[in-house]
Image 1 (tube, rainbow, N blue to C red):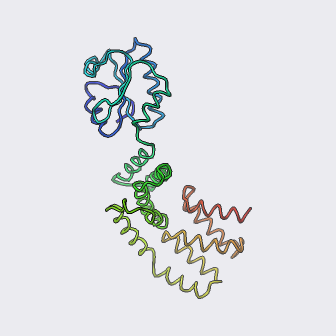
Image 2 (image 1 turned 180 degrees about the vertical axis):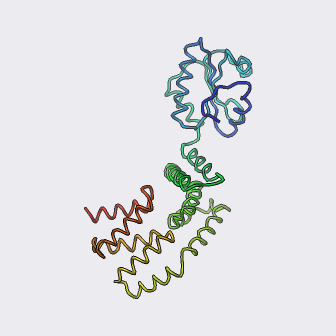
Image 3 (image 1 turned 90 degrees about the vertical axis):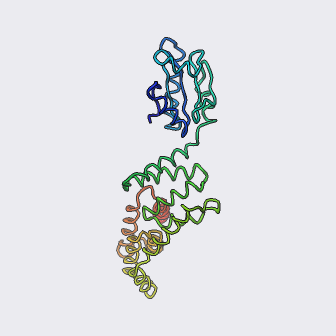
Amino acid sequence: MDNILDLTKDNIQQVVDASMQQIVVLAFWAQPQAQSVALVQMLEQLALQHAGRFVLAKVNCEAELEIANYFRIQSLPTTLVLDKGQPIDGFAGMQEAVQLSAMLEKYLPPLWQLQLEQAKALLALSQVSNDDLATAAVLLKEAYSASNHVGEVSLVLADVYLMQGELAQAQALLEQIGLADQDGYYQSLKAKLTLALDAADTPEIRDLQHKFEQHPQNLVLLLELSKALHSAHRDDEALALLFGVLSQDLGAENGTIKQVFMDILTALGQGNSLANQYRRKLYTLLY
C-alpha cells in the first residue's frame, strides 16, 4: 500500500485492514477550505519525512461525504489517528508542524522497527540476491545500533551474516544473545553456524596450518593459508595472519603480503566492519 493515498469507498476496507499493522492518519479536507488544504500539504510532507512509519489517507469531503459522516466530522480540517481500525487521537482545526510531529511520535513505532521489517521483507523474497543481502545488512546494522542491540534485531543480522558467509560476525552476535531471546530461531542459527564452521575447517586448511606451525617464517605458506582461509570465509583469521607480518615489514615478500591483504579487504567491501577495522590498522602503520 502507498504511504499517501486518497481514501474512497472502494479502498476504505483496505486502509482499515492496514491500520491493524501500522498507524493510519486520516486527513479530512475540502478544496474550498484553505486551512484544510494547507494542513493536508503539511501532513504529506511529514509522511514523506517519516518514510513509511505511517499511512496518510486523505478524505476529500466533497467527494466522500459518506465517509465524513461515518466518522462524524463536524468541521474542516479534521485529523484522526487510526490504530487497529479505531480512532485513538485527533484534532479539529489547524496545527503547527511541531505539534503534529509531537502527536504522531506518541504512536509511531521507532525507525529501527521499520528498518527491521524492511530487512525481513527482503529476506522473505523467493530469490534473495547478494544485493538484497547487502541492503538488508545495512538496514539491520543501523537498526542494531539504534535499538541498543535488541535481541530481535541481533538474530536477523546474525542470519544475514551466515548467508553472507561472515561466520565470525555471526558467532560474535549469537554469543551476545541473552537467555530471554534464545528461542527456536536462535537455536536454528546456532545449528547453522556449527555446520558452517565445520564446513570451513577443511583438510586443506588443517594441512596448511600444520605446515605453517612447523615453519612459521615461511611466508609462501602463510600466503597459501591466508588465501585458503579467505575462501572458507574465515577472513578474520586470514587478515590477522597477514597483518601480523605487515606490522613488522610492510614490504614483506616483495609486497605480495600487502597485496593479498588489500585484495581481501576489497573483496569484503566498504561496508564490512572487519574490513574497516583492518583498514584503520593499516592506516596506522602507513601514517
